[in-house]
Image (cartoon, rainbow, N blue to C red; front, side, top):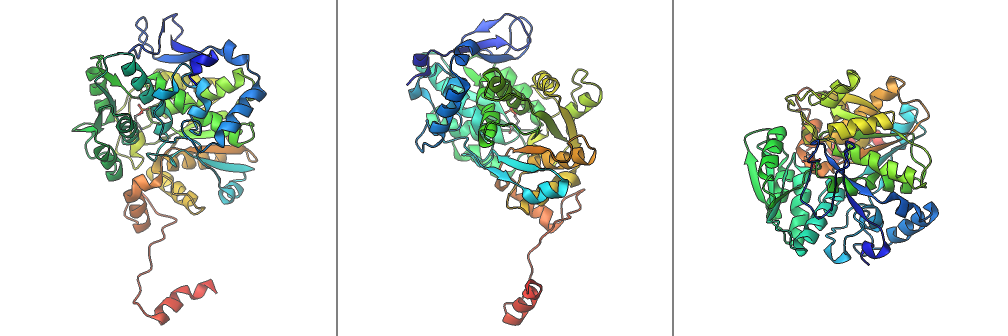
Length: 445
Ligand SMILES: N[C@@H](CCOP(=O)(O)O)C(=O)O
């Protein structure tokens, strides 16, 4: 069924309040009047005509399906994503529907009544970027089918967005071009677009430099921009908030902690909560904490200054390479969301992020360094009393740790610069004889 048959629709609107409107078939990323980013605006009155209980019932019933796109965590909620999109244009790899993993030991040590990790990296390309990329690439497939002359789709990336774009474009048979900062993404991230047949440009600059170039190149409307300044991405990524509430019986946590780089993700999280509030699926706002690496912390600096305008910075090298960004494109959107959700921003040093990731791994996860930043920020916010004891907290885990194997190896070898590995667990080197093995295990009783 095409969602247009169900009567719902969405269009572009200026996120800064101009009365600019455009069709989702248009190639446009910013408001032509004020240069502000666009947002996808849904017909909320039409959506509200369906009772909240019916939305919950629909979403629950689709959640159980193993068939795509119905069983996708994004397209199972398609009326809230891109309602007019015909089903035949959906490009899904089975994104979303990821585990909400409890961390009971860490919760108890921190004095929280619940701590859950929303494992968005348990996903086709190993990161939360799949949630938004399925919407964007499906939209491109639809535009091409309708005769819009798009030759290829391009993005700048710190490694996860490029992997997602390449995989979805490969599935759809659409050429992809990725702009990567040379030697600043992990080997696993680099090989993903290579394997998927994307055109990989390895550039002698950082992410912000790649972002400037991709924006210039995609001014040619035949090359479509896939970074999250394109608001189609936000429509998929906002489903993280919806799925999180669904996991929790439609009761939001008290706090959500999320790592922040280019800041599309924090904006999407807030947009998801706002839509659920408008449609009555939830009745309370969680508070949001955005976590940044201390070496790439433009939002944290702005927060300390009372959210003055963004001062772009040169992001320094950090283990949390996926959020090594000094000039976040979605800064204004994220600030708006933080204000609306009584939000805070905290930052983590290299040692704090690495140890927080390792601490969570001791409970059965395999966390990426960006999630380590969020967990370290959580520890600090609890210690400061900002997040109160007894709170129920969800942390958005953005990527799978397998993409960052070097980080894990370095941590457990104790070779990471500026990190004291408190939970290092190096292998025990032994001769292959029974006495040595028994002696190594003697403390286990
Ligand atoms: N961390 C991102 C950076 C690009 O951000 P996006 O929000 O524009 O996708 C990545 O993985 O590339």
